[in-house]
Amino acid sequence: MNQTASVQGFGTKKEAREQLKQQLAQYVGQQPESTQVFHRWMTRLEMASLAVVAAVFVLAMYLSINWATVPTKTIPTAWFAFPVSFALTMVLVGLHAAILRAFPPVVLPGKVQKFVTGSGAMWAGLGSILTGLAVASFWGLFAYSVWTLNLAMLEPLIGILGVVMGVGIVISMLVTTFQKIFKSR
Image (cartoon, rainbow, N blue to C red; front, side):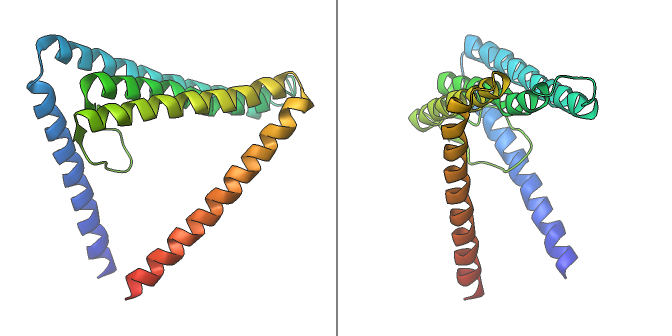
């Protein structure tokens, strides 16, 4: 019985992803040719930005494996640069969504999202851009302060990270608790 529920959930998620792809294709198909060309180019750029993420990850792994032959501060700097590499993808997706006025503008693996068009998509795109810039700023500053061993900068960054993680953990625990309570009723 448990396996059947798992298989049914997978089919539903796969169907939802296909539905999202169809909605996006239909929306883009109704746009002018210049917008369709823009969509194709942005999709390629977003995929290339994911290759940058993979390259930064491989670099960080390589440095970690060869820890004895590299300067000590390059390893944490590379790992702090890893989340910065995601920011490029976030900014590109946001720009793509804001101009196309469709969110998500590309169907990526992960959680299936609701398809939004119009001003809602533009605001979601702008939110993605701002989030990407905030992620790049925070983790980039972290990487820079580790590279330069600037403890005056590291201290508040560590404090901010600790508070954000603590709040995130508490919220996650509360959400899980409420989901269990309301699921049992």
